[in-house]
Amino acid sequence: MQDLLSGVALRAGRYLDGLDTRPVAPPQQVLNCLSVLDEPLPERPADPESVIDLLDRIGSPATVATAGGRFFGFVHGGCLPAALAANWLAGAWDQNAVLYTTSPIASRLEEVAQRWLAQLLKLPEDCGAAFATGATMANFTALAAARNTALERLGWDVEADGLFGAPPLTVVVSEETHPSVHKALGLLGLGRRRVVRVPVDGQGRMRAEAFPRLEGPAIVCVQAGNVNTGSVDPVGRICELAHPSGSWVHVDGAFGLWAQASPTLAGLVAGVEQADSWATDAHKWLNVPYDSGLAFVRGAARLSRAMSLSAAYIPEGARRDPGQFTPELSRRARGVEIWAALRSLGRAGLAGMIDRTCAHARRFAEGLRSAGCEILNEVILNQVLVSFGDAEATLGVIERIQRDGTCWCGGTSWQGRVAMRISVASWATTEQDVERSLQAILRARDEILKTHHRADQP
Ligand SMILES: *Cc1c(COP(=O)(O)O)cnc(C)c1O
Image 1 (cartoon, helix red, strand yellow):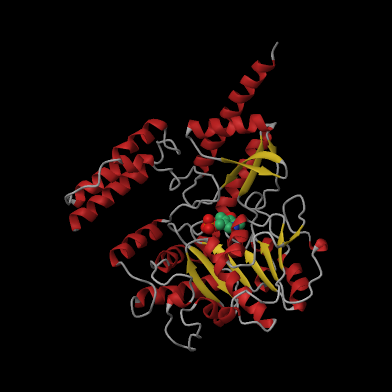
Image 2 (cartoon, helix red, strand yellow):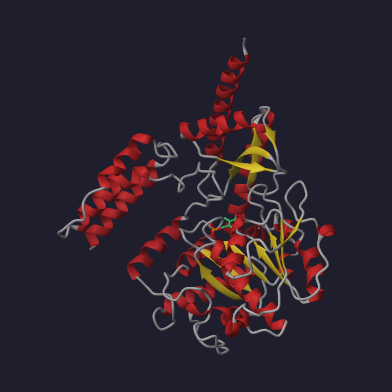
């Protein structure tokens, strides 16, 4: 076992060291080699060493280099050294984080991590927390507690009686609510379509002056961190408008909620602490391994009532059974890596990582703007939207950047325009990574503009 694991450590180290010199997206000839894996089901056992050798030889090159410093697609974080190492150790532990009894260490690390997170994200001390797979399941988990509480206020026990015959529940979202929230609403029987959509401004923020008058307890979904612009809904103002009717305000803060942890950025998310529940991703800006999301609900009992197996309360002061707060029972001990990330960063390290990635985003915006590119958003956080002219030119530049392999940026559509999105969320990104990527982006832009120009000639 020792030899096998030491060998894996060597291979993994080699893999990570190699990220600097390989293309971010795997080239086609590497992907062609994946056909080696299409072998018949083995009839006989194989030596674990040979299994790992095959995995490394064929698998490692066919990865996307999201663990490196120049992947700027979606909002992917990297993986902090302490978090990766903790993940390996926890893999050896093979704990089932369902009960205190099955893993005292998993239970205790969730408790500690929850306490630290509540301080960093300025959430109420009496929060319940679920360590879930990602923000989609965190949204689902928090919105289950929201649904149950709002219906309880209307005199309906949805846990016992379901939604058939329940009083109708108004759900308010914005035009820019992330699709994962709509998915969660669908899973909860609240409907993806039967929502009230509040219009947004030019940055994608919910317009408070267009917020509907709410009659009874409703569920309001707001956002901290628009996936395109990074903008934040006026959560404090929305809470003032929603709370008098007994309504529940849920914040999807998949990445934006982490702004709370930075003294220089916390002003952007002022007011989010007035909400009733929050979802965020640890695998994005906290830079822990996949998969890792977090749901927080004001009043731990509301969360455990929605999630526990027996629909019973957790007795006060009892040991934490993690499975009382999550949709799953058996689950891996995600709290281990979150704890390790926070333990290694400390408050200052986390703030520094958030600030640094935002500074990289500003440098991208400045470098591109000064080279004549159009920046479509106010770069307040870590997201940059770029246009290289018309849709065809922008799509052409994106394609060329991805093929070049120096960095990776994806396309998106923003208020009717095709754009390229740069998202800086990895601890591993350095200033040199940003400069190298800027050069690659501008090289691609120049090449595309040249061919466009040639095509225009008679
Ligand atoms: C990424 C993201 C999600 C979904 O998160 P997953 O971890 O992929 O489930 C939801 N909302 C926002 C705003 C996001 O950026």
